[in-house]
Length: 604
Image (cartoon, rainbow, N blue to C red):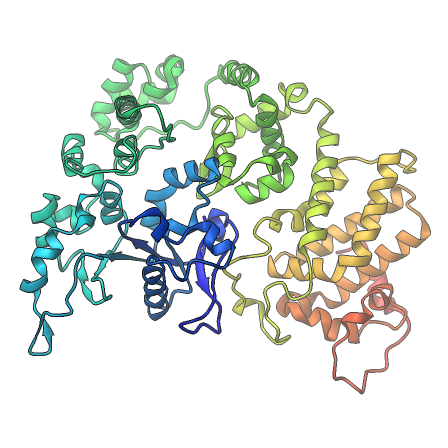
């Protein structure tokens, strides 16, 4: 998703800008515009914005009006379909169509611009006469278009504006007029779940609505029925509606199997349906001692099973076979490997960092699709990937190791280490959250809308763990081990302070102390050389000595931490260019770290 915004120095003639594509977990609060398109050459397009053009087009006015209203409502960002989608990119267009309902639903404000409703001449005693503009409102072209149905129903609130951007009301205050025009029930207009309305009823709402492309008559209803349906232009309207019907039916079947019912009825249903979605696992349920006790106790209302069927390995093996037969087999296996090795669940953005081949995908939606292709091993909740159960991870790290980790688990850890360090080297820099003031306490720090650490948060905390678990050989004779040590040395020399800032912002500085101690021990075991050993020992002492200050005040890294480090500190010398400016009297410091601190090493 891309969003429009005006720069902070916005004036009426200010420059309209557009963000790069945003990951789902990095999308800021935004307003969204619902409108009807004019002629194609009248609308401002994505290419117009890229060329800083389009201001002379008639469609620019409504974009400007939307941006001004968003600003009045305290929103910096807003979205308009004509220019926020690169329609020349077919993959992006397809994903935008599939995401449209969600984008409208998640908007903080939805503005409907009715270009054919004017109230310029309808003033009466300094107020707007509703009776005068009501006929134009009810007959507006906006109520005849296919896509505007979801734009009316998806958002939590909808505000209507006339041609001259006079507010006519919102979905609640105008519900009587909207109901009369659309036949949509009052409770739906008031925000009731669309699932409370039958399929036939929802289809009736779309009757007599028109779309420019005939297949869109089906595609624009996917969100109304809560199904995901990729557009296939050229398939024809009949095939498009046939696919929509099949998607709706599949969802109904799934909900039927998952429906909550009375526990007494559940007993019969488990026996009648043989376990619903679990299929062949029903025999294990029926033979389970807890189930038998529950089934025979008329007072029992709750069944809780704390184990899994013994045949799950066979199920997982079949799933691996299905993955292996797919066109995306290698990519799916890399995803499974990354998730299996991770020390905590990964967000989609973090998963891309650890999985090299995911970088080739165009957007987050394709990453979601690949996660969905990983059989029933994984589940996605709020953009974070989880295993469906611990047994799935155990299977991948056990019986499926050769298939998922063809080069071995240690090699996979090394790859995760390398990719993590590569990402951090590109991401980390001074004052990533633009706090500016060194006295800002960590409790008062909020990640910015576009969080620079969103994708690298996992890498920031766990790169050393992956290096250690790659089990480099003592002596570091192998070229890959030498390369790993070289990359560690280069990273510490160039990025150490910025990494500590990242750890502080992630509220993981305490773990950083442990990580540095572990890294020092590893390098000593590998006989990594006196220079690297000295560097890491000094880095260890630096974080131990200044932990309290940095943990509470991230930007004190560049103030008190540097000022109050020994004059011979390697880290102090490497980052002397980050010394605070304007301090003419500097404290007299000893040349080395305190003997007390050195005594405490190894006891962190």
